Amino acid sequence: MLILLKPDVTPEQQDAVEKHIRSLGYVPHVMPGATRTAVGITGNKGALDPEPFRMMPGVADAIPVSQPFKLVSREVKPEDTLVSVGDLTIGGNELIVAAGPCSVETREQIVATAESVRAQGARMLRGGAFKPRTSPYDFQGLKADGLKLLGEARAVTGLPVVTEVKDVESLAMVAEGAEMLQIGARNMQNFSLLEAVGELRRPVLLKRGMSASLKELLMAAEYIVARGNRQVVLCERGIRTFETMTRNTFDINAIPMLKQLSHLPVFADPSHGVGVRHGIAAVARAAVAAGADGLLIEVHPDPARALSDGAQSLTFAEFKELMSGVRAVAAAIGRSIAAPVG
Ligand code: PEP
Ligand code: MN
Image (tube, rainbow, N blue to C red; front, side):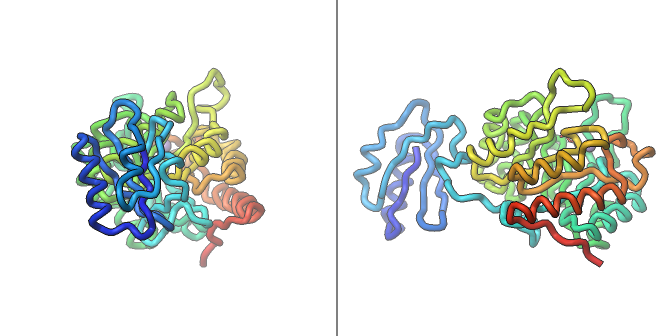
């Protein structure tokens, strides 16, 4: 249920609405909007009767919400959510490109990559310090040292950092070292982690699980938003299909569907979505055309020597080419991507 308050609602009337919701054993979520304030209700098992709410002073309307995900749905909030990362805004007219290596490996590697992608118009630096790897024998990331190196690359370039948080135990440390927290595909349904990042006021990049439906992705986002953290960006990163020529199958459908179902911004990660170098730039262009609000691209100074995801990491030159392609597509649909600098 969504309670729409009148534009001239008094604080006392709003308070009475919230109190009434609590008295029923449910949770009110106040959502200030551009033209009016709404109050979402969660915690109810079945459908609520809107009539008693409609009778309350200061209430314009009470609308049943049909989707199982509520706070992240467009039904509850028709206008786009803007997510702030440092000085950046995700979800506005400008598409934000976050680029960098899969894993932080050395100071030289992360600083050189940060400088190069920044020069090509990337607005955020990505790089994993805590790596969730399929094999326990593979490189697990530099962990705390990796966060420190990301900080050095930030100091050199001014780029805000997005990095993965793998578990609740390391959350405080990662939150200290990054402007944006990435929840990886393998953790999309780690509900304890979702609840823990929901308690923070730090933007979250939530990646779709490799076998997760869009509904499951949106329910995962709901876990975060229900705890009060509304700064969530959804990310399509490819799903498992029968196809073996590529690592995953990038689900282009996800972008228009998520944009319709939810007010949250949507990122595209063609690097993991394709998984082999060839095709990443083409899928990036397709994602921009489909309405993505940003891109996550893996770039490495020497992909052949990368400690993770080398096969899908672009060289600096390939990234430059990708950027000029996606910039042209963005312009064609009336959006923008930052121009190269320097
Ligand atoms: C990554 O971004 O490097 C990563 C591990 O992604 P995903 O969780 O989508 O596999
Ligand atoms: Mn990777």
